[in-house]
Length: 382
Image 1 (spheres, rainbow, N blue to C red):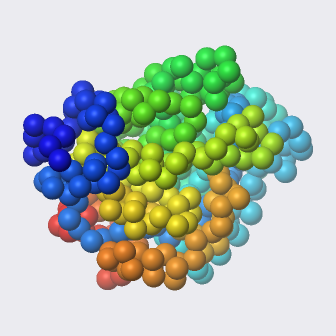
Image 2 (image 1 turned 90 degrees about the horizontal axis):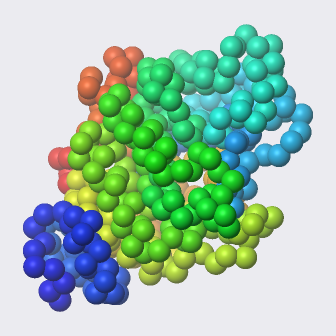
């Protein structure tokens, strides 16, 4: 099926939109992908063995689909203490976790200024200092920190860079329409696309290995997904710092404004992954979170995904707690049955394990974790 005149280079946004207008099925798209040099021929599928630590669920955003955010309550009980975080890290070490995933709501001090009093009682001036200290603790335990803290200023990114192997900030969508009245981001000042893109660009200037991506099914049009992937591609072309693109599906949560909205059809997810692969090419890592696709793993791999995301032997998915925590034996079995080999990776992908992206200390910890059974050859295996 000749959908475009050429298939030898990554698709531009304009070409992807032309392809979208042809309304191909995902099977036609996949056939097109597999006939082009953009197809990733590696049979390696990766995952990160992590322990997830939600530092606080207090957040200034009120997204229509989110159940992570915690409402009013006793502030001291809404922040994980140093002792609690240390205990989680110790357990992670015992379970051979190599990534410490720190999650927190965006700008918690903005909506709960009393947080500063709690942090001061522990000896910290604010959340940034506290977060950096907890990342330091993870490094002392021999684990690589990966922080998702929402929008950050340049100086905050720079400080966190010193103690993180990588960081994460989902774009989710480049559609300003979703931020208007009635949209899922109406009450979320931190979800304005221009601000998210500015933060992603700042991370590129600072040479921070970044995980980002889009959220499918929150009211965006298919063309808007292409546009979002296009702006991320342009930032990666300029700075080369995006280590992974996540194509994540919306999952309805009870008690949220979008509880009655259905999940996007599997075919839409598959089509989006194919488009991501066609636009970014075979070198980009594309993640499809394993626990969100319980019956279609082989299809996602065929569509171009090559990473299952974080899989923890300890903690559940705090963003989608209704989804069952994956069992590694099951993950390995289903990956193998699809014709692929499952390999563990670190929080920072191998192609970013250099002095350009990592401080000497972070790189030293990362290199100490590279073992025969830990994936360390994306480029050579692509």
